[in-house]
Length: 147
Image (cartoon, rainbow, N blue to C red; front, side):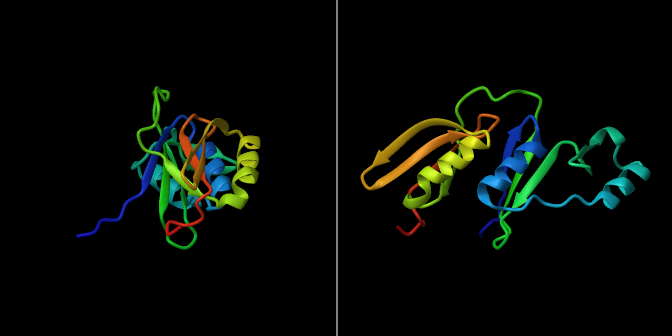
């Protein structure tokens, strides 16, 4: 049996981090269904405190997601009370291709990422960076999984 999955990232500010990752990966942020949220509050199934406004739109306070435009794969950003305390045990490798590695590094650091280190093993190169909340990811010169 094969299971589907989503990746969930714990964070302090899910909406801002979802915006950052959407820009980083070129995936859209899932739209908010304001009518549904209002209906849940009006019928007592949620509280006003469960909501917030982000960029002028009513959203659920504790989560935001981005979705791959073709595959539908989803990354959920979920608010947690504690700060990040150590190195990630799981991270994303973003395949940007050798020719775009430096330009993507420049673009993402300008948008708030932090360069952590560079690596190379044989013909493979990568750059480890951290998103604005310190979650690690690798930009890799590997263009596709088959290379």
